Length: 289
Ligand code: SAM
Image (cartoon, rainbow, N blue to C red; front, top):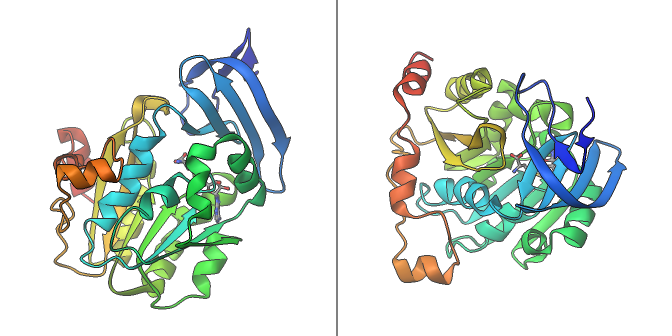
């Protein structure tokens, strides 16, 4: 299917059969095939710049904060002492930008498979990519799955900010990946992974949560709204080595002043709690796992 028609970019892929989101494009900024994927950056009339990998929207300048803040602060505020954080994927830099804001975080390791995503994000998405050059961040270019195989008891929190389960990210949704993350965590550690939407590819949510539950003694699913993603919603699977973890009850609550100082626009303790409250159909599907 032709992704560009009459100045509009449309997202087509098999993960969301019968659904396509479209954006009026003001400029094609860059298009190439890297060693790993098709990379497209466009400027749009309504949502600023978009990063598109293998035809799938990764982020837009207008609403990326919702995703980046939630995938970062849900685990960071559930862990009592998140000193050492690992980010897998996250090539646009938005998650690193958020994670370094947490006052308890001392060091962030990030492993992104595609060096071209890092370079192009620095060039075209500087408001996100600023996270990549923060002094707390050590960046590696490599495969997150292979990286995980070489690390043991090292991280308090692992955030998997991956693209969707096709192409290079497929391995990051497997049960074996959750098992490797378990080994890479320090005692009491937590994981948080991008896990799809309950509205269309709900099987992806169920499968990912099932993998997480089979490895971790405590697991849950939370969601946030991102208008530029198909269905306008995306979620996160979280797992903890501590069986008593209450995911919907943040152990760290920031004051209004602290939230303002950290320039948080979406996350606070109220939205943290509410993000784990699912509509009945989804709660039932997940309960049966
Ligand atoms: N927020 C986005 C979303 O949910 O659509 C994800 C954004 S981020 C750009 C996803 C990144 O994961 C991409 O840069 C991609 O190159 C990276 N990635 C995919 N597979 C990977 C792997 N096996 N190891 C490390 N990074 C990977």
